[in-house]
Each structure stands twice: as structure tokens, then as C-alpha cells.
Length: 395
Image 1 (cartoon, rainbow, N blue to C red):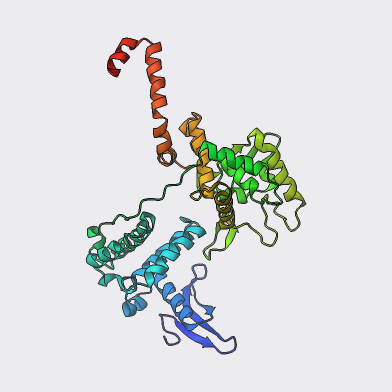
Image 2 (image 1 turned 120 degrees about the vertical axis):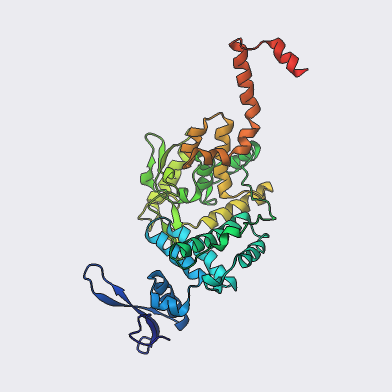
């Protein structure tokens, strides 16, 4: 434990409050004075961990000289900086924090950054091949960023990540599939014959399937987001989580392109009205949310997903569909109908057209022959080729 007055900060036990305090000095830009700041914790270990993180964030030279630079502290400091500069959301912060917490528990993650070599990193990365490619990418990204920061700050002269090869998972990447037309018809009929009193997420599923909203966007809808006169829904926010993984109402959509206006299909109109009426009459619903749980402020996305999977497995023997699959179903039907990719992009709220094209590659491949037929017919109509040429090619 550091002594009081030490420039490294210190941890002490407050007997009156029966709490452990972490105290450190902080320079006040406005006044030019140095202030002592204190934060209390239940345990000594929590207080020490917090103080250590603060010292690395402030790049305290005395502390760093005495304690070295643990690689995970660089990761955490970088993550906090990204949050404070609004480069990532609180939900992203929470997700990446969980990755760093796992790394802190392994021997490699407990080492100082200047004592780690490329062979150690490669060996650990190779041990992850049974995880998904997504999980491997997250770990690789954290190591990569930490060493780049260490090089930029002069902690290291050479980056060991240059010699590290990111392994591929032995698992196949999970493919989100859409409902087939027949499955969608059967599921739609099932929902339309249900009352919201005994199928509370009925209209969540319908909105996702026929308007392409993300489940968090649906659960964030309030009555004032619905324009019944012009049959439109305004999407401008989503349910998300904070850095403590608690559900909060976000003030924006998942992507900047997610803020959009989506037309309400005619057949869906009465069900939107039905949901709005329930929201207006529901007690303890000051926000007038369309899908407000009785005993909680917000609906958990996991609850909606679990209910969807229960219904599909029980009634249709379908086990590989999630709420995201319903959104994917909408995008698939749009493409199958011949809708231009740029329009699909706008309706789905994708930032970039390449996201749309990459997401629905298999669907575009399926219908490319039809599109080629259109070109061939155009050639014939414009007399660029003759029927005899086509017959000759077929032989």
C-alpha cells in the first residue's frame, strides 16, 4: 500500500464508512491547482485496481517506473479513451471490457508489455482456434492496438505483432438465414391469429419481418414515432446497454444510417394501431413505448429472442432462427422482389452499400441468372444478337 502523499496515489480504509478509498491527485485545468480526488469501494482489491487504472490513464511516470506497464492496463486505458471521445458506444465499451477481463485472467495478460514476445502471442492466438472467428478477431485487435500504443508512446522499440499471424477458427462462420417464403407465410398466419394478450411480442415479430427493423429499434418505438396519417415509422434511437451492461434508451440508432423513415405496409397498419392503443392506455408508461413490460422499464432483447425461438420450435420445428433472422427475412424479400440494392440499403439502415451487398451475397447469386436473362432479352430486342447465335451457344 502506498503511503499518504505519494505521487503514485494511495489506498486506505475508512473506519467510519467501512469502505476502502482510492485517493490520487488531479490537475484542474480551469484553476491550475492540484486537487485530491477520492473514490470508495467495498474491497481493498477493487480500490487498488481502480487506482492502478487511473495511474496508467494519467501516464504517471513514477508509478510506471515502479510497476511496469501491464498490457491489459494499456488496453483498458485505450478503451476508456475511446468511450470518453465518443468513438464507441457504452454498449461497445461493455463488450470489449469483457474481452479484456478474460485476457487479464491468463498468464500472458498479466505480463508487462515490454516482456512479451511474438512467440508467446502466437502460441496464445493458436490456442483460440476452437472459438469463433469473431472472438479471435476481438482478441487479436486488442493485442494489436496495445502494442501500437506502446510503440507510439516510446515504451517499446519493436512491435512483436508484426510477426504474429491471426489464425482462422476451425468453426464455420455462423450464417444468419432468412425464413423461406413458406415458413414466413406459416409464421405470419400464426401471428395474425393471435391476440397480443397471449402473444405479447406478436407485433415485434411482424414489424421486424415486414419492415426490417432491428429488435432494439422496435423495442425503442414510442407512439410519437408513428405517423398514421402518412403510414410511416420514424426510427431515430434504439435500446442498448451501458458500460455496466444495464439496458438504457440510446439517443441514436446503431449506425448513423440507422436513422431513417420506413413505410408501414397496408396489411400491418391495423396491428400498429392496436399496439399504439395498448401503449396509450398502459399504466406506468410515461414514455408511451409500444412494447413496455409491466414490471420493468424496458424489454430485454434476449426475452424477445427466447420467445421467438420457443414459438418456432414448438409450432414449426424451426431451431435456427433469431430475431435478427426476421430482419434478414425482410431484406431477402426486398431483393427477391427486384428492389435496387441502394433502396434496400436505405430501408435496412446500412451505412454502406457494400454491407448490403456482402450481407445478401447468396441471395444476389441466386437471382443473378434471372438478371442475366434480362440482359439477353435486351440484346435480342435491340438486335445486338440473333436467336441463331443463342442456339449455337447452347449446342
